[in-house]
Amino acid sequence: MAYTSKQTGFWASKKRQERIISLILFIIAWLGACIFVVPLVWMISTSLKTPTDIFTIPPKWIPISKIIVNYDTKLIAKGSGIAKISKGEEGARIVDIIKEGKIVSSVVVPIVGELYVKNKDVIKTGDLVAQIPSSGTAKIIKNPDGTSIIKILSKSGYTINEYNLPRGTKFYIKDGDTVRVGQHIATIMPQWHNYVEAWAPKALNETFNTYLLNTIIITASAIIGVLLSSTFVAYGFARFRFPLRDLLFLLMISTMMIPVQVTMIPTFILFKYLGWIDSFKPLIIPTFFGGGAFNIFLIRQFFMTIPYELDDAAKIDGCNYFQILYIILLPLVKPALITVAIFGFVYNWNDFLNPLIYLNSSSKYTLALGLQTFTTMYGSYYHLMMAASTIVLLPVLIIFFLGQRYFIEGVATSGLKG
Image 1 (cartoon, rainbow, N blue to C red):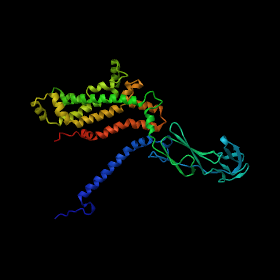
Image 2 (spheres, one colour):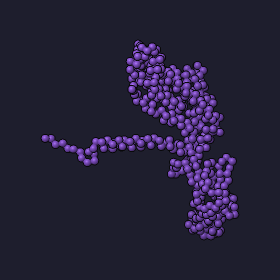
Image 3 (cartoon, rainbow, N blue to C red):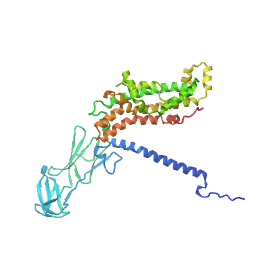
Image 4 (cartoon, one colour):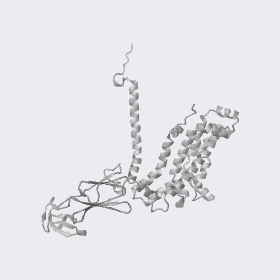
């Protein structure tokens, strides 16, 4: 009798093994999703920050900043030597520490500071040179543009420190309150007005309203053209038998291997000859002639999964070919149609190359071109660039999440149900 070893212990249960493997795969999938979503979260977070909070170390993920009274109350000497006091700007005093005829270090004492040294005093490293009051009276100044300034004043009315605050700041003190070093006086909230400023930039001739309208016109028209043309072509390849059908289908599929750069110049020359340059025609009309090889292939594969008996039954009931397509087949290939619509929306919404080639007037720019122009003019305003990018990206995210169920079914090319 042969001896067979049996696994004992924790791994003896096959059900337990499957659960653990499923848990591991689930964790890996979530980690991968988190890695891919990090840039999106950072973009949204940056779009709600003030310019001073963008490059803070460590980075701030939550666009909320606490304003705490913080300044050095004790000015310490950073060298040894003889003190030489001179006058600076706005009543400040400059204490130079001189050793062997050279200035070792300098300490700038504002007018509110109390000096603890005199001219020609001997100073050592670490000696107290001056002291700044650790408390003062708050004065809040609100500007017409919505920004604010908090000044901390000494008893004699001099400014100890001041904070320039953006719009939407939440204050925890009132005008005339006494504040001290280390006190939390305000909180800078997320800067939602960045989106308003980015949507209507002052440096551009057009606002994003114009770019949005142009993009909607091009995208909606292109989706209609792609759905109509690719559906009819796919219907012909899937349900009709004619000479050289398979060869023509193979030829059409092979066009997917032709790089766009190969046909770019001939296509431009053709559209220029037709007088379509600087118009929406090159971006819309070609979609009504074929709809793209991939879209035709996807819809045709769905048509192929539907039994021909449905067509025969419809013909017996008196339906013509258009009625068979509209009444019988289209409802069954809805996932494929939605998938093609999503692909068409994302492509045309984000398309940068074709509008760049064919559109010259800024009043006809799409969102992609407008965003590029915005980046050129506001290259150093990262919070505004992130806000504009978020606005452009948001519709794509919404459309994808609303149609993800059909999108997954369409990519999987599922067959007839029921």
